[in-house]
Length: 591
Image (cartoon, rainbow, N blue to C red):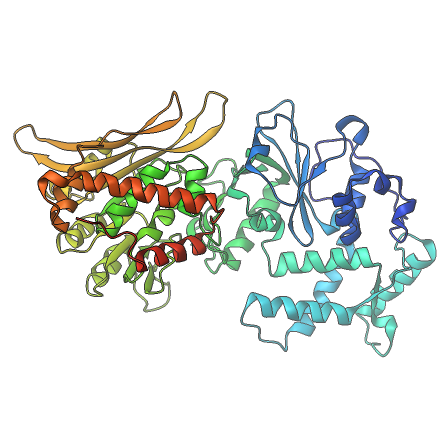
């Protein structure tokens, strides 16, 4: 039995000659629910894993093909769910810790094929040399083709049988001998062993190695390796988890070096820190060596979904309500500039992606980022990413400041800045002054702290310029009375301006979150500065008819609720619906 994980329970011995040919003869199979039976028929190695679990003490894990967020309320989850065709995850309770276990169940869990990997890799080196793959898909296809040429799948083959063990030794010897004229040069494997071999080769050569299960799991938000020991995860449903994957010192350094080379940014003792983007768009930070990280090399991966959450998903999780979303819809459609601000992991980028669907569909958008996080649904979208200076080449560094200056010449209707941290903040405010609305994320837990950072080093925005920013959305990860961590928009604030007499800034809290009732209050109803003094005047609404603005918000809130009730929460479908609504003139205010 070959495991790369340290299981948190005493493992039942799995018979090596366990026969998958007649599942009805298996007592474990017979007691499984119908959905679990379907999975083990597709992937027999999952049945082997069920055999390993001491079900007399922990019970049979319940299989879910799709996770519901309500499962996160379970105190002792014992759940298995698939993340791909050949990977399952077992969430297993730990009664002694607040973090439960996250156990990747992979094809090589039972089948011991590690001793065959070095020989197969040596053979692959010669076979793949003639190919020149350009994409990960091409590399995967080539490796599969070569493995099929190397191996013979024999359903009757059992690697531990004495006769076949001799046959195996001969095949491994002949595999690398000069005599390749017949099947003696092939490697004989059982179907389960071949599946495990193919999975491990593809996982390590094309995928992310040990991290492949967590990278493929769309439920994972953050992956943290603090050094030697387990990897910690933040799960969308089960929150904080610890994996059963643990690194030794040598394995960790080797893995980090291979990982940095795979993403095209090799790390060294001279340059031990890198920030990069993984092929799936996730953001990674790596710190290498004990000189700068006392518990050994460490890395953090911030995962991003291939498709962002729509504003309706955000509302359904109670991060904000329909009225707040309708208010932001009006503000964004009328070209107001806004920052989504909060601490790390408060959901700022998720909210920014969600509300960008409210930008008019015919707008031209330019986004500027260090790492690709922003997802814009509009067709007329220019996406620009910063570039570091390449060593040994003449390529110069291209920073946020440079890209933002270039964006001003591209005549965009909206400029999206992934995150404002430094001198690019001053350019962003100049862009707003010249009539280019800007949306961005910002690290600050309150409006006061945001203004302090904007007007101080290194951003240094003049105080009289700050009112060019119209809105500040403050978002946070808060702990509910039941102990759960949830994301909430704490407030939406309208920036009025700088008061030179008091040397302070005036702003109106349009919306606020009530932590007692976990609801939101429209405090700016009937007194909104932006609705009455900015947007109403822009649209030609008379001073005595500004109630029209509030009626419009109520109307749009009802539209959003109606769309939500139809279960249309997909990001792209929602954007298409907003496009149809605008095209039909349903968002046009009657003055």
